[in-house]
Length: 159
Image: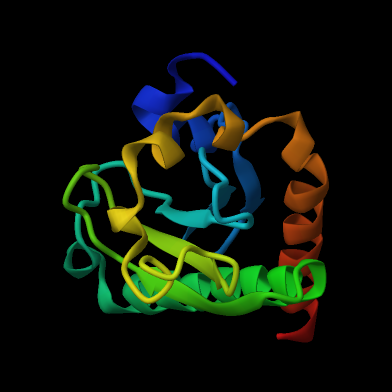
């Protein structure tokens, strides 16, 4: 997974060239995270590259984005609950401190996480979790990716 798509994740998704896209949703793109030290980590990207904040969207589109975040969160929860008996919960975050575009993080949390981190924000994980090749998204995550996509499809059909 290399290339310039990381420099313009939303534009690449709109052009069909972002390899992390799971599904196109109502107001954005569900993508699997670049790192998978918490398997199932996903992100919702808004579908308008210039949008930086939730408040930049008209109210109807805001509600669609939040509904998409809920749908992605539920998909991650269902998949992680099935795949790992130590699944605990999903954390949803809209932060925007680093990347200048609206996006929401969907973090699954597990009982097997280190005791000193399990109840804290994922941002406190050591640097190596974010940069080590062991946790980088790759072909070994194809089943997880496919399962998340299928779950998103299922949630669309059940409303």
